[in-house]
Image (tube, rainbow, N blue to C red; front, side, top):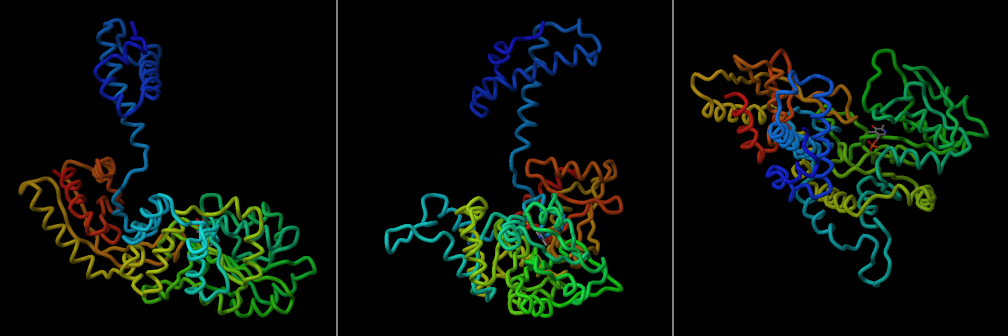
Length: 461
Ligand SMILES: *Cc1c(COP(=O)(O)O)cnc(C)c1O
């Protein structure tokens, strides 16, 4: 009695979906809808299959088809409101773009001069302008952009150390997350890992004793997502640079997040890339979408000879960045050079936001929220003190004081409220603490506040 795919395709429900899905997807979804009803019946989850008529089953299949389409659509890239307070949220796309970056992306999305020199009418050098901006900001001789920082690290190790040894402190053999593990990346690059020191203490003499004629480089990895505290020791970049120079080997620092400006006033002791360079690191790699606040990219800066060697390697061609990435980096880096990055680059703006500023915004959201909720409503809104984390492998352990909007409901659990927010038309991503749903406005732009308000009041009503 089950409908055929053809029957289902001819229903009003299917015809209505056709414009959105296209014929091909509609057919496969229709098959899947009928299969799932067949499965339910044959495994006995439908209590009385015989009570269904053909018409009944076709109606069920229409409903199932709509559900399948909706759940397939839910997997698209969707805009969300990040109310978690985690500024660099890897699962939510890390750095949001600045308004200027958006504009330049739009411009570059058509034909553009990514590898074309308008003056000569000939082929130009890919990324030349962005590389100049990076060199200017970091005071490095040369710069190069690849797909992400993991690619940068891999490429650097392949070019600098293939077949040789790379010395790494045991305190820095880390996993960054998402399968990026320093020992594994080293092994894949063809370099041999030479571990020195201990988890908590590694001395300059440990590095020195490990140097042999096979040593190609010393790798220093920034502890982006963990902290070793207490009885600890590690040599400075200046000392490691001196040692490397004496032995004719390369000092490479994987800075990970890497700040371009001093962020210590916000409690972040991330190394400034310019400091690593002036302290004597030969090459440094860092991400484009962490504290820099631009696009997913891996940036390599350092000595001209080394950077050019990397540029000529065939692997660079395989790992190069797209024109859209150059566009985003261009706009973002220009903002740093104009010294308005703290106001224009969203990641920095959010980091800089004071607790007082967030409290004032939270109070105003609370007031507007209470207005929309029924006076005798079951929803409850209060403001509590809390902390925002930086996230994204930047500034581990650093938290910024914030004000949280805490949501409760007399008939809904915190889990239900969180789910309601998350599954709204514009999903709002929040967190639960002490049985309350917490909204941190640090990561919500003011433009998104009206929408946030609407989603919350719909869930609390
Ligand atoms: C984040 C990070 C990486 C990986 O960077 P992606 O841009 O995500 O590829 C590598 N090394 C360190 C130290 C990091 O913090």
